[in-house]
Amino acid sequence: MGIADDAQNTAADLKGRAKEAAGAVTGNDDLKAEGQADQAVAAVKDAIADAADKIKDGIDAVKDKLTGSS
Image 1 (cartoon, one colour):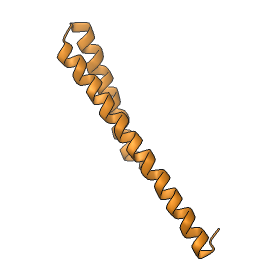
Image 2 (spheres, one colour; image 1 turned 180 degrees about the horizontal axis):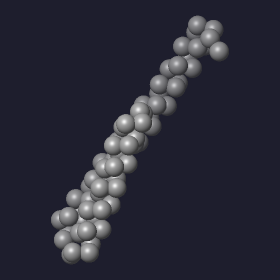
Image 3 (cartoon, helix red, strand yellow; image 1 turned 60 degrees about the horizontal axis):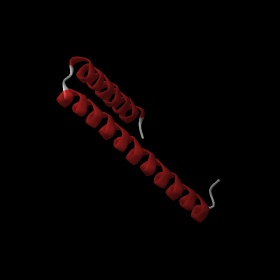
Image 4 (cartoon, one colour; image 1 turned 30 degrees about the vertical axis):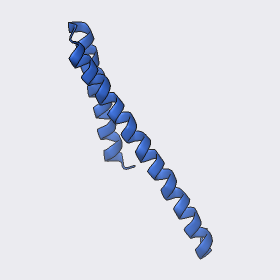
């Protein structure tokens, strides 16, 4: 996962937290739910990016073994 992707996911999570808090304070259940959904989307994107990183690391390790590198 790149730094830009990480920053975007963090921003989306923070935006979701802000919406959830604003919804809770104002009694707006729709805004609160939207904030929770934004947070969930950011968490899923983080999990996918982490899984992709692990797969890439595994592929790189196999390539290194096959080519005799490091």
